[in-house]
Length: 173
Image (tube, rainbow, N blue to C red):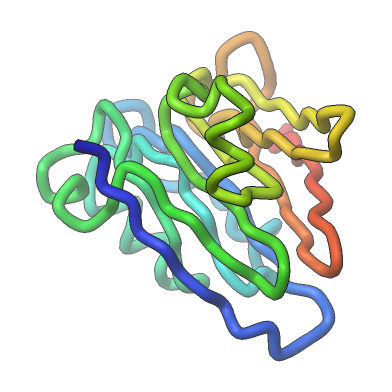
């Protein structure tokens, strides 16, 4: 059974900024989170990690910057899988962000997304960055990977949440 955790962020300012990262694969693909990630995340309020931290070291490095919302990935060690759910739902004001590691398989049916009342789904697994907005205004975000990109440059993303959600992919080259 899929473990889902729900979080509510008190919106104490007009805009909440999330640094979004996935597929860090520490230490199997890199020894640590690249320094460029930290420079881009220096002003974020929170960090979303869409799975495949692999070890607790990646969690610890990111937590030094900002509180981390994360989900477990298919490559995460048991020490990481114990901490994080399969799916996280983060509510900020009227906006809801879902986070899931694997592509978008359980969410392919838009009916499921509507039932969860999500406005955005952050996912990982493919290591390929993408921001896609549907005709209905739903936002899909994959930040790619800062350490093991596939058919792209190393990347992360920034999400800005006000009355709507805006996403931008950041190349680390």
